Length: 248
Ligand SMILES: [Zn+2]
Image (tube, rainbow, N blue to C red; front, side, top):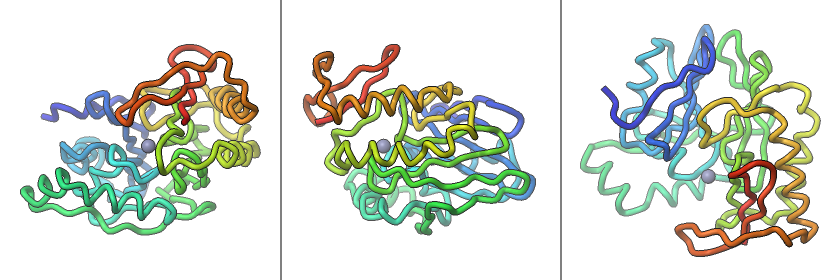
């Protein structure tokens, strides 16, 4: 029924949605509500996809304001995003190709509602707490699901973290953001990232933070060029392939 988005069951109430290997979203169901974490590229109706596994009322949280995490907001009435990423998200909603496509389909992006550090998204039986992690973007958040011992990280902590973007913050700021997550390290065993294919071990946190620290300290002798759609920048490899901190 859906060509691009494939659902993968993580446990009895969490699904990974893989949008054509280009974007990843998640669906978490509680007893009262279900939560869509990131709506992916928007080519297919994320609401209908979620409704194939749950009839609960749906809520949407965007981990940050990048197109591959928010364009599917067109299928919803409202979506939560940290205020520090709202200007960025609105810029992406103004992209001419996106505008043209949604006007043709008679759709418009969901209204944004603010979500803040310390907020808890209560689904009934499961609460996800919000942590702000400025770095990849200014308003990127992680969501901690204490019951399942899972941290949803968006693109804030991922095998290849992109810090070369114009909207990315200085590496020292990002290191500080990661340091601030130290206090919850004992509360999750697994990480689900914004482009993942399944559960990552929680030790990604230490490996990733050490790598960011090495970049801050100028330990660049193993760094390699990194090609992306904006040109060529640098990448700091860490741990097993293909782990890299990408920066300018
Ligand atoms: Zn991103």
